Image (cartoon, rainbow, N blue to C red; front, side):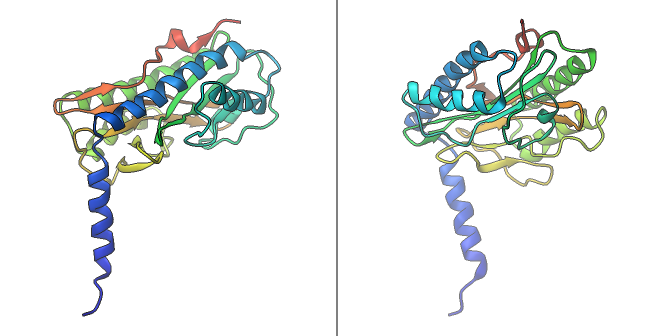
Length: 251
């Protein structure tokens, strides 16, 4: 009998769907990884000073996770200052932090092999009117997506569309990645928030919500939380505030 080339796809999809909902122990591991990441973020904010380079901050993040006995990171930390924050997958370099910069920090760790993922954008000193506007718009897109989930929506493309349509009215063709993804033993798991996604979110799945706007020559804003999909809505697993006031670092 000849092999059906679709069997592998079907089996892989079934495996993804089985793995997506997290049991109590798995969820505890993800939350533990996130709480450690939140401690590291608090330490990083104290470490930031004028003249520090992206690489110095990235190395501090790595050392901090070692200090908290969570050295196996879920991905290489993203640290971007100023205009570099407009690069979605920015590679940290020798750019020095200065007053007025946007600071984008995206990192996570693992605990018992389960990942965490979080992005926060900050302003090093009082932000400009344009910086404030972009931040508030991205925050609003986050809130709109979460409100849709809170009403029980489980279709990934509808949730993605809610945030994407809002941002598209203000920034033409700028939100260039999916709204979010599943998180588990790897940092990107099924299902996915994308415009053409056919995924339906199972109850018990941990997802990221991470809209972003990236303006070349200016900078970018991305805000990312991890949430647990529940029968009636969601539970936010991220405890770091994301309001505009919290994003402004006083010099």
